[in-house]
Amino acid sequence: MSNEQLYSGKVLVAGATGKTGQWVVKRLLHYGISVRVLSRDAEKARGLLGARVEIIGGKIQSTTDIARAVAGCSAVISTLGSNAVSGESSPAEVDRDGVIRLVDEAAKAGVKHFGIVSSLAVTKWYHPLNLFAGVLTKKWEAEEHVRAVFGKDGRSYTIVRPGGLKDGEPLLNKLHVDTGDKLWNGFINRADVAELLVLSLWLEKAKNKTFEVVNDVEEPQSDLAKYYDLLPMA
Ligand SMILES: NC(=O)c1ccc[n+]([C@@H]2O[C@H](COP(=O)([O-])OP(=O)(O)OC[C@H]3O[C@@H](n4cnc5c(N)ncnc54)[C@H](OP(=O)(O)O)[C@@H]3O)[C@@H](O)[C@H]2O)c1
Image (tube, rainbow, N blue to C red; front, side):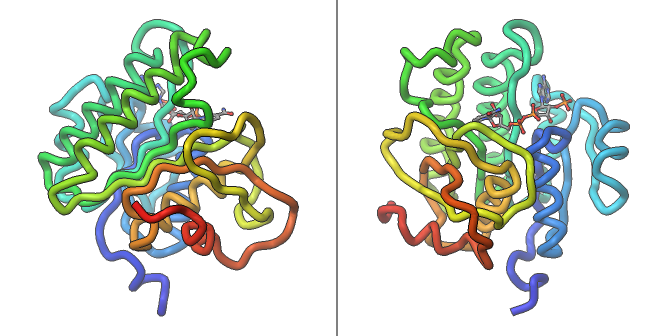
């Protein structure tokens, strides 16, 4: 099968100017998939992502901007992430409320699949990372909303909970996947997280899954789809 036949819809990426988001865009383009991006800084997005990507300037605080961005898309991938303890880029604004708004507008617009980067330890309120304005708890609340809205009515979701994120090319390591938020440490290349989210667009076995993932030993991989086989059925 050629790459072009794997997924024919248009995908909105939120957080595309971030390190994982840029990899999501690269892997979508690798598979010949149409990409639209929602960014609060359209000029920055254009500079980073190039001319092959459709860019909508807008804020994740604005339902009107989000509605414009999701219109006509069949899937959304969110790699949004907070970077301040307060203000418009805080965990409450970005990781929770921004994602919740995106989920609601996407469902209203008829989007069929929602993929998102969350985090290892997201269920552990006592984890030290929560000292950063409750970031894990905010991500957990967003996850719950994704499952509630996209886990029904013919829609689907895939929630990837990575360990510590690193830079590097995709498909260089074996992966270790798990469920139930039992892993306490480990690292993974952002590019592998991006690849897993992109594969979730067309792999039935990736639908309605929430799972943790870290890199295992170095060993070139021809495909990451096989790791979805290791997850329990939804
Ligand atoms: N770092 C880790 O080790 C680690 C581990 C597990 C999970 N995670 C999670 O993985 C995800 C991806 O991480 P990353 O390192 O790729 O993140 P990143 O490079 O910091 O990218 C974050 C993205 O979110 C966007 N964003 C932030 N505040 C925004 C706002 N107020 N309005 C609109 N967009 C906003 C940024 O846009 P701008 O370019 O406009 O700022 C950027 O596109 C995040 O959710 C992160 O919390 C990280």
